Image 1 (cartoon, rainbow, N blue to C red):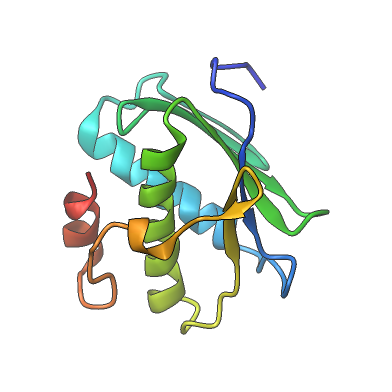
Image 2: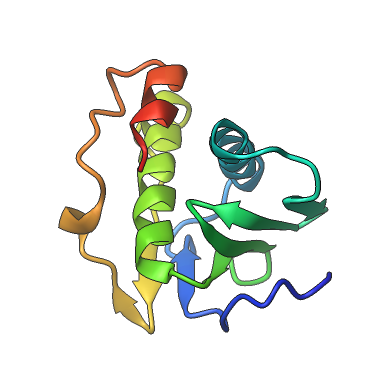
Length: 138
């Protein structure tokens, strides 16, 4: 993978207390691609491989997502971790509500500390269609 200059991985979306279901990472990446495409041209701002997605302009910042099946985790690197993690957390809530029936169990850890749920964007993910949901992310 080409280094896009993102900071070291300090965020782990940890599914190890249950498991990281097949397809959750891919669904998260799809939401990210659609989100980025609404904000910028998709020319070379996205790079993807089997377990990695890199975005050079995700909410105006560099982001790398890596699926780590051995740790049952998704690793997140970003040049603005707090803003990016708020958006990703909202996306995971949307996936959990609409696809996983609320059964997806995970923790978001930044520097080893649990991310505070109140920092998640206040978006009613259960009731919004996907277009309205993505448009509401800032």
